Length: 209
Image 1: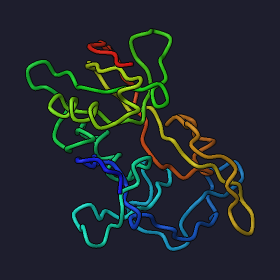
Image 2 (image 1 turned 45 degrees about the vertical axis):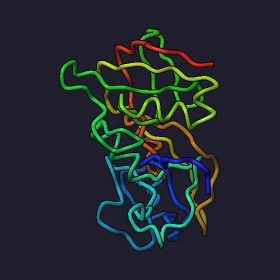
Image 3 (image 1 turned 90 degrees about the vertical axis):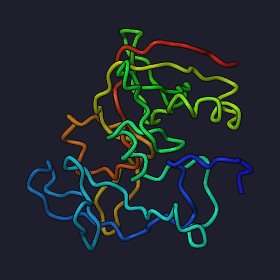
């Protein structure tokens, strides 16, 4: 067990991992005529034409979910938070109705600043104002080096993904690679594990460390 008093909504549990068999299937849209797929396909496997990693959602099934894995995100819950701008800790909206701005805690490993200096890419979902203090008090990484900010606008950017090459068994060639939504040539070879968004008009409020 992690020892945290609050396990964030996006954190994965041990028994949520799914290891269904991957294959390459014929696909005319690929430059090689193949794309990565699950051997037994299911509706909802693909998002925007990209294969998304399968996971279970056992968060509410305490007796079956296993221990939390504090350094791993549940792909579906992370995606939900990004799509709806929900707090990664409590899953409530992270956008303030009065200002329309969303609260975020950003750390260097998961935030890449863009050339404007007022935005960048991240796969870390927002954190609502009410949960900021909880997150900072419980997470040593955030206390060491993090920026609390508000964000004016958010748009989809791409995914973090595992890269595969065709063969008798698909071969993993790279892990946690950023692939943009318009990098179509790479889409047939990836398994997306988290969504990445572009943040605009980032206003720093507090910096730790």
